[in-house]
Amino acid sequence: MAKVSVKNVYKIYPGEKGGEVTAVKDVSLEIADREFVVLVGPSGCGKSTTLRMIAGLEEISKGDIYIGEKRVNDVAPKDRDIAMVFQNYALYPHMSVFDNLAFGLKLRKYPKAEIKKRVVDAASILGIEELLERKPKALSGGQRQRVAVGRAIVRQPKVFLFDEPLSNLDAKMRVQMRTEITKLHQRLQATM
Image 1 (cartoon, rainbow, N blue to C red):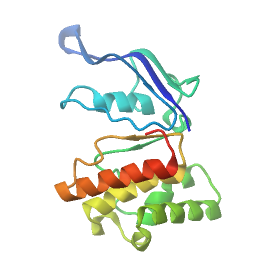
Image 2: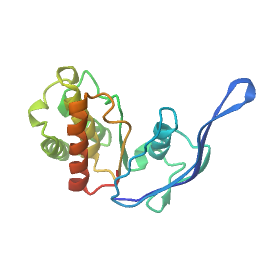
Image 3: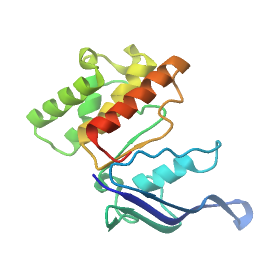
Image 4: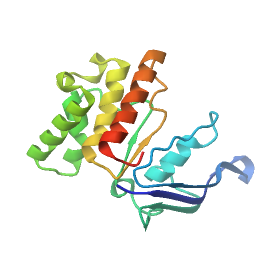
């Protein structure tokens, strides 16, 4: 696994009439290897933008981001060894659960046997083995969330990032998923 270091990071967007809009201002944080950290703040304060910069999905304007000892400011998202779970699940509606879980591994040209093993292992960890042939539209919100987490697990990344993973769930399911994510952290011993 890996530690994550964010040092004096800014995200500045072009504004109207040549001005600028600062979405993230001078954020610094250290997340130890295998630590579980939650960013809390009001809507629009830059939590998602910060996560997207760590993942490489958003360019940083100033500052530095390190995964382990490696500066990753200019490293492509696919090469950062990070998996991100989005609040909208980001599942492919035309694919089965199995194919959604396998998609990233297929893109990386993993052998079929390794893909199957990782998908079956992730499905077992998340208790979704019986859902592997279903399409996302046939799943509940909690099941979709598990599939989204499974897509991250199969990659076996150094770092997991979750962007509001509970926001689309009802109160009962939020409590259950919070517990599941905590158990997942303990089981995988990952930086989250």
